[in-house]
Each structure stands twice: as structure tokens, then as C-alpha cells.
Length: 328
Ligand code: SF4
Ligand code: MG
Image (tube, rainbow, N blue to C red; front, side, top):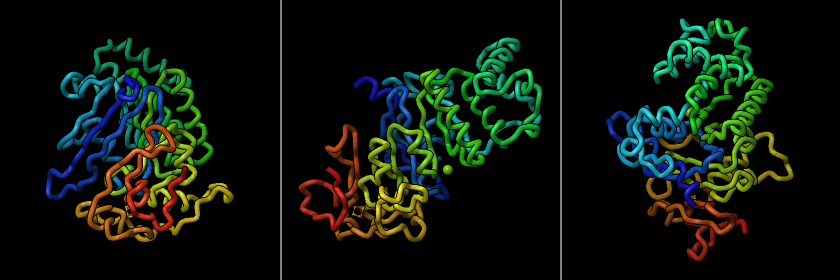
């Protein structure tokens, strides 16, 4: 449908400099308006690189981002994309200029985009109130005078100041205490409803991703290995990597828990990824085809848009799957 194509990324390949990591390789997905897509994977799998490619903090070697079917950089100017797509990072402190007051920080982007000084300040007060920070109390404070949770609310206010359509949250709550984290997650949910936002929610915390997301995309060494409804992924998914990742998840209901061999070792070096399926050196189900041939994403019938890249789960592939679950 048209909505499916609302936000679309195809082929982000980063391999430009010798020293650079080929972190994201031919990743392609679509997000609906108003949807939250969770992005999970071990650190170094390319989650943050993907986010930076999307907002062009890094130039992709190939591929394109489409907003409402329009190609960014052609039909949509980069400048307009940077209004429409905002990002909130993990480190609430270094995201803020310590010499600017909260009001100045939040008013900065509206002023750059043409608001008068007074209008930008008014906008700052408005969004500060929307994120639960009383402007009378906070506008003239400085970042070091705020708690981590308050600073992250300021960063969310800055992201909202330009009325974005999409907000990329890259480990945005990961540095917060659990109780503060819950408050900020609920704030994000409220803001999403109120302003019809679309979120890309990047996190290593699978519980938080499942709580926030409609669908989840699982990355391994720069590749998408599985994408599907959050509830399907939370039950352990289909791909052996997803199943291992979720079986290591600490606070899952033990009755629901997937019992798979745990992930051992670190992911291999993404500069020189393994042949065939990149997961094969760590996969308990690997067969010779896995070393030779890279599995492509294919549609699973269990839900619309559910895709997995694993040889052993392709129906009728002739491979028995050596115990890989193909949930039906
Ligand atoms: Fe494991 Fe082979 Fe599937 Fe890769 S393609 S996840 S190595 S079974
Ligand atoms: Mg990261």
C-alpha cells in the first residue's frame, strides 16, 4: 500500500574508506506512518550506522531513502529531510551545548529554520511543556543543572521543535535509571499518539524494544536477518540468530522462554565478514550451503511482511533445518 512506502530505505552500503567498517550492507525496509519499528542486534551490528546513513550524517555509497515515495536528495531536499527526521542519542549530556540555556538549545533549530528569535523562544517553551518540563522552571537552566532524565526530555523537545514526522531513537533511554526510563518511554508513547509520530527505536534492550515496537528488525553484522511483528519476534522469532538473542534475554517469562544454545563469542569482524551466511560460524544449525551461499530475505506466510534470511527455514528448500523452528 501507499502507507507501506511512507518511509523506505533500500541498499545502504558503507565501504568507502579502507579504514571504515562495512557496517551496513544492502539493508532494505519500509515503515508505515505512525508505526514504531524496533531495531535490535548486538553492538557493532550496524544499528547506529544505519541511523546515521538515514539522516546522512554518513553518506551512503549506494541506495536511497524515500519519504512518502519521494527520494531524499532528489525530490526531497536534504534540508527538508533533516526537518522531517529527527534523532535522539543515548548520551543526553554531550548532545547538549553546555554553554546554551535549555531555552537556547531547544530554540536553536527553529531559529536556524527561519523563526524569529521571539517565535523560536515561544516554540521552545511550548515543546518543553509537552515533554513535561515546566518552562518557567527549566528554560533558563543549563544542562549541568539537570538530571539525566530531564536532559533527555530536553533532547526530545529539541527533536520535536521542528514538527518532525519520524524520530530515530538510538539507545535514547539506555543510560537512564530504570524508573526514569519507564517515565521517558511512556512520554515517548504519549508524544507519538499526540503528534502522529513514526519511530525507529534502536536498542540493545529487547524488553524495551518489545514494549515500544509494532514490528522489529533484527540485524546481524550489517544485514537484516529477520523482520516481523513485535509479538512474533518476542516469542523468539524464527532465525537462529534471533532465537539465540532472545533466549539470552534475562527477564522473559520462563514458561515462554526459547531454549536455544546461547550465543557464544563476539560477532566476527564486520570489515571481513564470513562467507555465505554471516552467522554461520556461530550457528548451531549451519550446513555446507550456509558457508557457500548467502541467504536472501524471503517472505514467511505466518504474517504479512514477515521476512527471514536463513537457508534452513525456506519451505521446500530440501533442507530439514536440523531443528530450526519454522513456526506455523
Ligand atoms: Fe544458520 Fe545456515 Fe540459517 Fe545462517 S543460513 S542462520 S548458518 S542455518
Ligand atoms: Mg549503537
